[in-house]
Length: 180
Image (cartoon, rainbow, N blue to C red; front, top):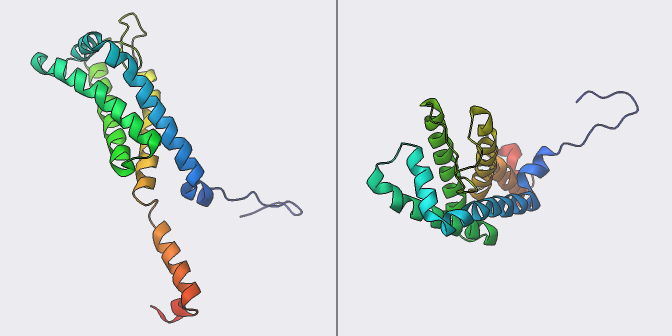
């Protein structure tokens, strides 16, 4: 790292960020609250949510009502699991999968030219119509879910291996020197 003479270099925050339990906790609770908040109106008004799902023109009509009920309660369970940290790997993977599903469904509807209210946080049919620009919200949620999933499954590639090498060096001094 090149710095000006007399100035201290900025600290490298990447190792702390990718291995920090507090970042993982905030991310886990934040995503859990998003899913829990998103589910409230869907659980209270499943009929309106089913109409919104029908507007996407992706699912067959005979499946929409069941899918609307199932999805709303899945979001409740997912949000609770993430907030409590229960079944974290499965919850993180499910959150990522659902976000990909939402992003894909919205993209398909927008590609077809269907102007719709997304139904993400409200089942009010008078809400804002989603556009391509509004996909950034789903994209941010997807990035957060991906980060959480990677961390739940053991972190970024090389983190565990580096920790194992570091631990073995403490137990067996000079071990890395002879290993090739």
